[in-house]
Length: 437
Image (cartoon, rainbow, N blue to C red; front, side, top):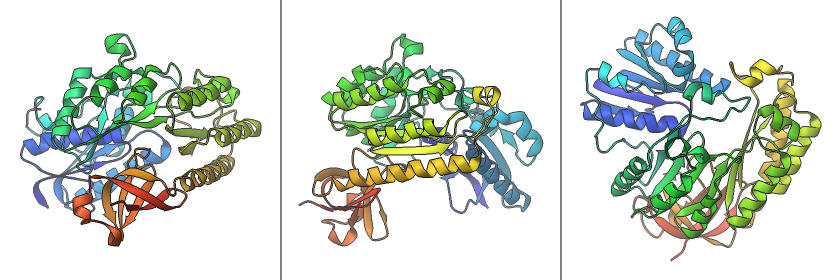
């Protein structure tokens, strides 16, 4: 058992990861030996940062807590703490069911963990975070919470109302990270496009990204988790004018059928959704769109699902994820609708949708063969150096593979660097290339 050792285990999304990174910096400053997502945790303290978004994520978080509880029962762990979304939402229930946990913290009070361990929270600490990502990229969280009330989504029940961070605070963090060698920034929030309304009484995302693009050392800025309704179209102008703002937007559209969109409380119509995608591609030529879709929401008929398939054929999204509806306690859908679509039907629709997207993605990838693209390399995996283009976000999108035997320099020297890569072949979700001289 590692004395003064703390193992932090992060479940769920990159927004949770940022919280874990902030906690790690505080604990290291207090003198602890901190690891993140270790394959073999051996510290005397373990902190599980949980996810509470959907059923599968909740089960994974509970399984991890139970696993660490077993380590504690066997004398391999002294103290176990839990924080994050799951404990924010189900605190009282979890306390009664998991007595092996020494302390519970939610989505916003986890700073108390530092003080409960006997140390002051250092608000002026620099660096603010201990990065768990490769040193050349980082996630930057610009707000918490969400004011949308989509029928199926439990996030507002967990995170509460939207709260924007001040622009100057965000820019200061980006400058600090750039000074540390970070040059690729993934901008994240529950809902990017609402940013600024609470602080500045206007949608301030375009201004934020405009100012961020002017910071020395910022090579790529990539935007995640936008919303189509009330989209701030000034952002398109910012993307066109700044080369370091990637032609990339992650925007969850969820569905296209009017009846399903109404049931989902998305505040957008089928015609408006088509018009949105069309305008986005027109105003930002060459943009890569990542979206997320849902199948099996109550009321989704075969005809409505057919509309969704037709929309995907038309839109030809560069990246698309999808999931089957699952009923979440306390949401509008759970209270207003019966979850009447059989799970087998949901999974069959999900498979059909993803097969269609796989074909589309393969066709898009194939058209890149013969082109030269700027690539930032992340890591070595087997016989390949793995990187990404501006159209690909870490963990979730496509990758570019270059054979180690064909590299012009050692792979360690190339990780984090930008190179021109000629694409020589493609698969559904990956490209293969060679670094140009």
